[in-house]
Length: 136
Image (cartoon, rainbow, N blue to C red; front, top):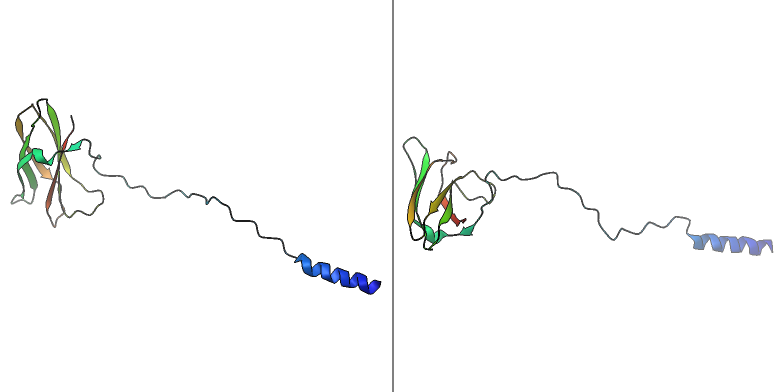
């Protein structure tokens, strides 16, 4: 009888495993907050793209190394429209860059000249980019 009790005890001990089961993995991973936040140097554009309104656009660097841009915006509609013209000099990197913006209000059927002086630019210069938006 004593042998049977010891054999039964050995069988039960072998089946029990002896270690606690690992807790099941959580079904929902915990979200972690990002430590970095990118803030643009220029307000995001507001309005509808209106590249067709732009004409006679020039963007040049003067002898002192300062960039300026000028051109005309035309309003083909009957009502008053305000255009937001933004000029940027440099390689398009996809990140926030320094640019200069001017708002020009044009009566229905009219056009207006704009001039933007002292456009920020890297020392290496680069191509000149322009964006025209109709804002109102």
